[in-house]
Amino acid sequence: MTMPRCVLPGRTYLITRRCIQRQFLLAPDDVVNDCLLFCLARAADKYNVEVHAATFLSNHFHLVITDVEANLPKFMQWLSEYSAKCTNAYRGRWGALFEPESYSAVDLIEGNDVLDKMAYTLMNPVLSGLVRWGYQWPGFRNNPELIGLREYGVRRPSVYFSARGSIPKEAKLTFVKPKQFKHMTDEEFRTALCGKCRALERSIQEKFDREGRKFLGRRKILAQDPWESATTWEEKRGLDPRIAAKRKWPRIAAINDLQAFRQRYREALERYKAGEHDVAFPAGTYWMRVHLGVRCEALLR
Image 1 (spheres, helix red, strand yellow):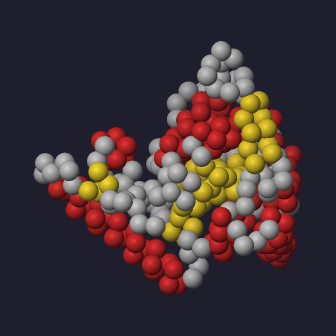
Image 2 (cartoon, rainbow, N blue to C red):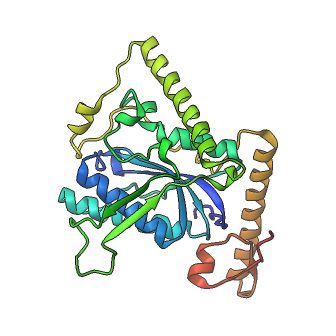
């Protein structure tokens, strides 16, 4: 049995989802880019999710989002399902597009943790050795200089969705400043994020230059065969972090809160299985509440 996921309103996450067998099934071109942006925009609007940063690479994607109404599982189900259906229809393939394991959702505890993971997300093509400069990535990646300024609009992809269906003809998405930075103006936040991105970009460039390594480059990325897989080594069955916090005491507090949630959940589940169906599960319980209608404790504000 997998660990229960604590889903509470207002949490900010780093999301990661990987393609099956590390295949380049999301290899960028105009059609794939539009499909992914449309699905992200539609899912965010449908489930009231604020999107702060997004980068879709050839075999995985990263998002930084705030789950305003505790709809994270529904948001990720819609995004994963329809981006897979669109991509499969375009590629002429069937079956799973993403790894069968669930997506990774890392709870970002403080503002600096959010800023770090936004820079990580937006600079991932550079960190992965794909392009020397973030703006050179040919897949979808929102521009950090335009957060809060640009509205991305994309028409419903014809490769999967029916013109007579219920899905809207167009989806729109504006990447917004996270709530952790409400003390900053949008311009001040963009300046801080761009500075973090540039510092990370420079550090990777300097590392590659010292080691005599080359970035793959746009031309080779656009020539990737979607059916091929990454050949670089990747650790399997390692740690699956649920929390990211640089500062020690906020990290310890968040870990203690998560452990307490899991303990209360286990106790409530045992009582429920024993026939006590009126038992109160801890606030943040998702699957049992949505699918079986169990009672949950009130959320303390």
